[in-house]
Length: 365
Image (tube, rainbow, N blue to C red; front, side, top):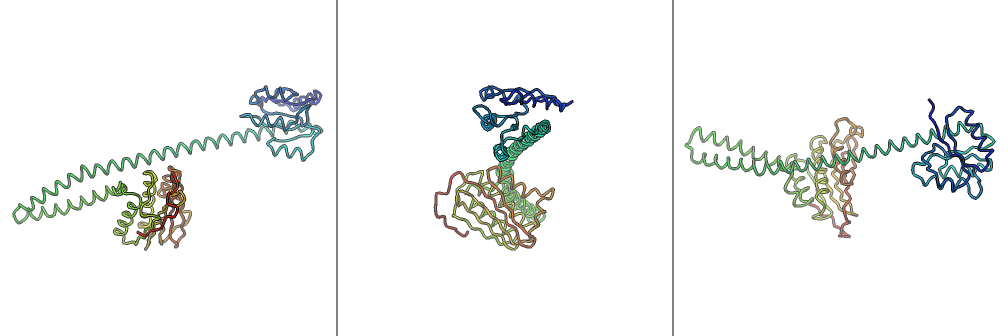
């Protein structure tokens, strides 16, 4: 069954109003048309109760532009169509530029049902798009909030696990090492000594592994600031992989909030991991900067690089995770790479307040 429509007709000629009514009736459309002839009457109506407004261009004491000024100020207003015999094409086009949906000359009133139907259809399609866009934006906000919550939860859990490894496992392993060392010193020569030495060797390996795991989870050096933490990260990467790392900073120490520091550190950590695992790089450069109220961390390598479509692979979560991390603190991530031309990962994080040093000097670390 065809949808019932309510139309508001603003017209000072009763004969023209009746003609519009008859024309719509003959089309077979189901509608209720309300007639008014003053701006005061318009201002007293609830416009969201109508599906469309028809308005003559020139009326006693006001024009369709005055009608539109009032209509456009109302939330959820219907579309507005000009139906006039005293308007030039230029004036009609200007009116549509202001937001009116369409115009029709009274001499061509036979087309009124089509113009009305099209204006309502376009308006409803626009409303549907706006609602879909609003729902998408709300969904993205919820996803961003969830991502931020998950990241905070992960980091809190990492810190808790690191503390447990340090306090419980590390302490227990150290105590066992002391006991084994005592046994080794007091055991007679022979099998017990050999087994004790082997056990001490394995225990030392376990202690080293626990310390490495603890540092990867949440290195205590983060408490010394971003520059110190990234310096430790780069030196550890250089020792482990043999890949040379050059670190440069805009200042010997960069004071940033803890959440921004953690995002910057994790970005550098992930970029170094990618450079070591996949890039086949011989050299990596890390640049830290806090110029113009933005903390920037750039990690560049001279490795094999990758094509742009590689970032769209279904399981390419590393860079996507970095993008989401940056987004949770209002930042953004840029990745530049080409096959055979290396890769550059840049994270930019707005700082709460601009740097107090107007002329920061770059220092090599």
